[in-house]
Image (cartoon, rainbow, N blue to C red; front, side, top):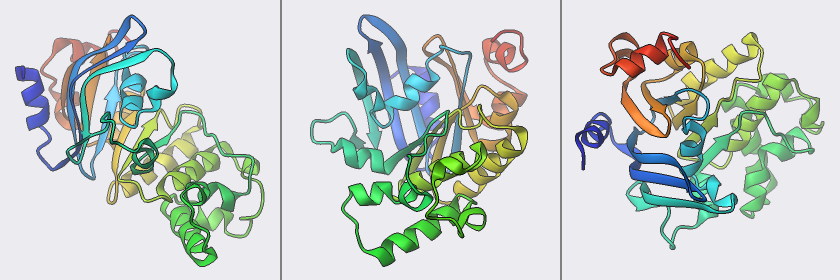
Amino acid sequence: MDQLSQDNIAATLETPVIEAEKLNFFYGNAQALYNISLAFPRRKVTALIGPSGCGKSTFLRCLNRMNDLVDGTRVEGSIKINGADIYSSSMDVIELRRRVGMVFQKSNPFPKSIYENVIYGLRIAGVNNKAVLDEAVEKSLKGAALWDEVKDRLTQSALGLSGGQQQRLCIARAIAVNPEVILMDEPCSALDPKSTARVEDLIGELRQDYTIIIVTHNMQQAARVSDYTAFLYEGLLVEYGLTKKIFMKPKNKQTEDYITGRFG
C-alpha cells in the first residue's frame, strides 16, 4: 500500500464503517477513478470536494453500488462495509442499499402521499404492521426535522411540499429503514439559502446516529458541516484529512489552490 493510502486510512482510525482500497472505476474503456483509498469513520460527516467531473459523484455511487445500474461499468479494488466486501457475489445489493441510503441532488419524492413516501422502503421489505409503520413515519419525519410541518397532512401528496421540504422528506425516507450510512449527492444545490440552512442543521443532528458522506461543490458548506474532507481531482484523491486542517493548512498546493478559488 502506498504512503497516501496509509495516511488516508490512518487518518480515520475512529472505527471506519466503510473503507475503499485501491479503487479503480471505469465507464467502458474510460477510467473515472484511479487507485482511491479512503476510510470513513463511524458517525462522522465526510465531505467530498473537487471541480465538476472530478469523480466525486461516481465515487459516492460506488459506495452503494448505484453504478451497477449503468451499462458497461467496471470496478477494480475493494470497498468494504464493516469488513464485508460490497462487491462480493454473496452481497445482497438490496440489503446493501438499505444499509447505505442515498439522497440525490434533486429531491425525488414519489407521486404518493407523504406517509407512503416515508414508509416506501419498509413496504418493500414486507413490513405491513400499521402500528410499526405509524411509529416509523413519526420517528423518521422528526429525525428529518419535518414532522411539525406535515403531521396534519400525511395523506396529502408529497409533490405539494416545497423544494426544501421535499428534500427533507427524501432524508426521512432514507432514514426510515434504519441505515448505517447516508450518502448525499449535492443535496442543497437546488435549494434556496433558508432551505439549505435547514438541511445543514439537519446534517449536524443526524451525525449523532449515522455516518454521512456528502458531495458538495460549496466550500463554505463543506467547512460548516463536515468533520473530514477529501479533495478529488481528475479521478485522483489528492488530499484527505480533518476538515479544519484541509481548509486552514492543506499539505498539497493543488488543494490550497482549489479551496482558495484559484481554479475549479
